[in-house]
Length: 300
Image (tube, rainbow, N blue to C red; front, side, top):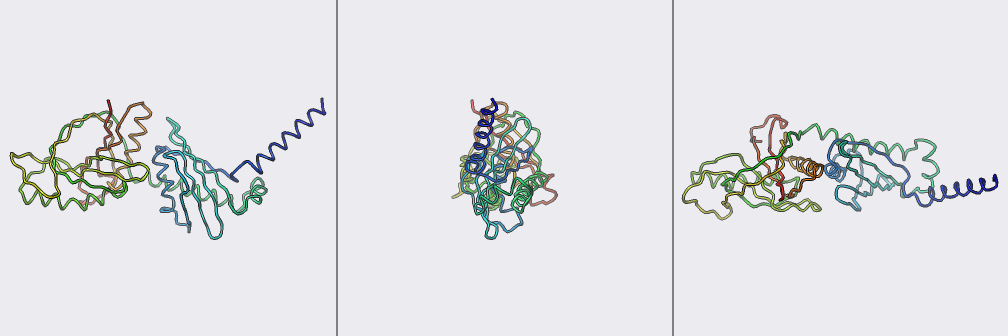
């Protein structure tokens, strides 16, 4: 009996050694949790090099929407691979795990990592902590709340069809304000509500959106034409709605909360958000006091 136990124990040790030194493709892993939606965390990690003050040369090697990212990180003459796994954990938010590999010191790290915090382990912890802390700091710059069902009534409006990266939509709209307002003033038209954006196409992979930037107007029997400005009446629709407080440059963060909410409650929505802006950013003030209403239309 003892003879067989020795064989079994020896085989187990051999198998564990083969797995650790040959099959295991990372040297260290670090996890953290966030109460932010997985889709928002995903975009935050893709933006890592823009908020990290360290001298990192970072390249995204592959990505799978809202769940996996593989990045190459170069620091000096060292090269590391970070494989991020992003897991939705309703109702507890999101779990993020970074599987980290030292590409130039594979065997050395396999030997040394289990026996203490060497420079590689310390850097791995520091980098992951930087990503987690930046996510927390970012969350303090906006609020998304009061998510509920809503119905949006038809609106007659003047609008400009525009296109941009999601994160550039605010600056793109700023460039269009003068065109629409010149049209309104020159033709002595009357505004009739808050400006709004309606997305007509959202390419989630490239992050590019086509959208209409709209200003509600009081309709007249005869409306003057314009080479760029168009006129229409929007259609009524039912939607899930959120209130957003913060700079309108990042109002799209609310899209991910609404997508998360719709998935959690198994509601079908179209990924064509509508945003209504209740404050004029030109007036200044604390962006956390600015308010926008964000909608994702339901599909039936």
